[in-house]
Length: 113
Length: 113
Image 1 (cartoon, chains in turn cyan, blue):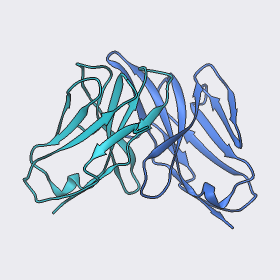
Image 2 (cartoon, one colour):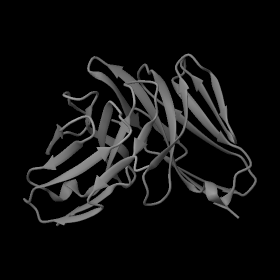
Image 3 (cartoon, one colour):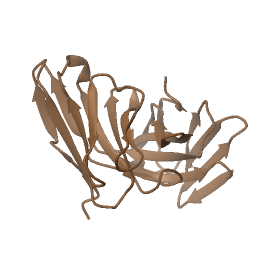
Image 4 (cartoon, one colour):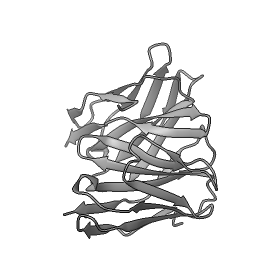
């Protein structure tokens, strides 16, 4: 029962480096999400994908790109990391596009120095 | 800005007491959900209340929703030390591209043994 799996769990980047955060779910969910969580800020939505083949911006999309590779996988890419992107990143998925709960991964703790 | 705002930001109680957390939001919703987060972990879904429901129970949890006031409350009865965590409300908002979950900043609950 893997649920939502994120990789890596921890990452340190230098300013300007790029990286991709991976997320996969094995629950046949339609919708997937990427959030970031900063101290005292709760979770803020970066991008989401209501269904395979679609992606939309959330509250804080600048500096990020996403790819819904297939129904299972939704990746988040930082093209040129900045210290302001230091955060904990969570991927989540849900079955339908409303009235269903979201399942979260364990998070990726990213530090940009 | 955050769609949901929790109140209080922090709550400290003794084991056995009840804990009440409130959430206010700004726009029309499909449903409102409550999540729990233990330190350093992902979020776990607790309960979902639909926009046409006014009250819902699950074990020691009671959630109310007042759509006219755009507010919800989460009551945890007979609290235990293991209930210590952050609690977040999330609003499910319908948009043309699908629905998305928007989180508040959370309430940090500490239950003292």
